[in-house]
Length: 201
Image 1: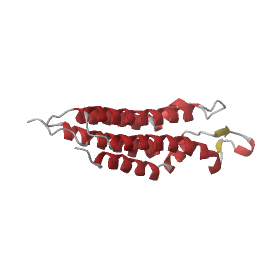
Image 2: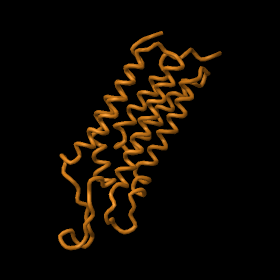
Image 3: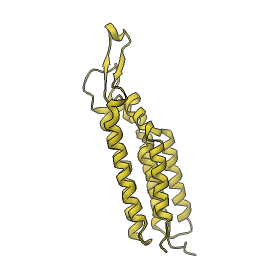
Image 4: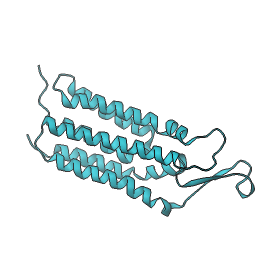
């Protein structure tokens, strides 16, 4: 039965992604040091310091990350007005996976793009692994578990679906900076399960 539930789930995820989007800028600037350079000695002091661009310098980051999430949200809403079907659920899951993949790739790029000197024993990929990868893994596991629930009609399917959504939210809370994409992923996953056939007895 066609209804607004799926589209509303996507919109809810999009609203949360927009609200928490500012944390993404903090992640790429303060943690991954994108748009920054390392200085040590002289005016930078003996311990060294990261010098980063001001807020205006990160408008491009906001446009790139926010624009991709907005594009996926619009696509999700358009898919949400279609009649519930297995094909619709698959499309939602593909969009959800794209959202995770996009924020994972982009944050890795942000962490590793700087080729200048760094503090001793620090590597860009190491920063990404420590700050972002655990959250990405949790979100991917959540998508797999929830996707299994969305694509099946067993007694456990609904529980699997919402456990998956919960895992994505937990993964996002571990690193809130990826919420600009992963809250939308959670909304897409929830939308994939809306309108499913009743569980088999």
